Length: 206
Ligand code: MD3
Ligand code: FE
Image 1 (cartoon, helix red, strand yellow):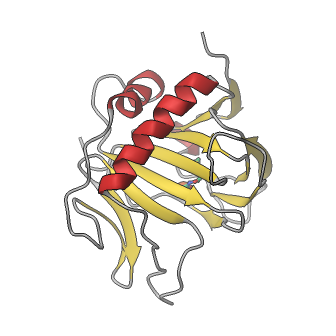
Image 2 (cartoon, protein in one colour):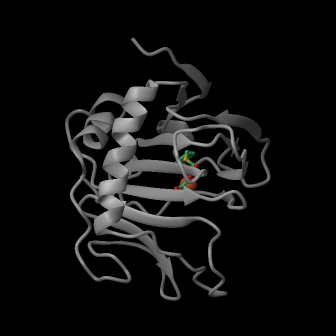
Image 3 (cartoon, helix red, strand yellow):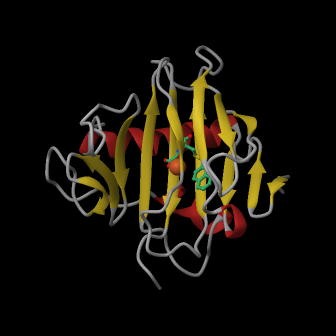
């Protein structure tokens, strides 16, 4: 049994849904993906400015950003190789916290070093906005900001720690959100420090 908190309609937080042993097993799956699909540095579509977060993906589709824009595609932007398949424990997390009837199509892996952040944004590159997004945090704590569907609306700050799961659906699926900062040294899961966040999604319309 995993307890949870409803932060807003459609936004549910499961603190420490994964115990340290399960976190280590998920991390091993992430490492194996990254051995095949190394972290890349996305750039902003208009300015070409690099993100401070580095990324990779697994599953049939992966999210990328470069001069041509934001999109999902089936291959790594640098190696051009197909994304590795979803590893079993990551796929199971989608079935358990997201949807059991259809598999996830994309798992975006974000890596935050000590100075990385993610500005307030909406996730709207998915044709299917009815499916939830499942987020898994591994490593250093993130100071996460959750707003509403309106950019200028009120926000709240939530500390997402290692092993936490956050599920967005329904009325919160188009909420603005971002990562203000991470707290270096707050977890010992990653030998190199920093934080991985996995987001599992459906991308194509049903
Ligand atoms: C709220 N990632 O990859 S995960 C992203 O911690 C992203 O790396 C953040 O925002 C991170 O797009 C936040 C939690 C999350 C994920 C998707 C959401 C919150 C969300 C979609 C809608 C509203
Ligand atoms: Fe997002």
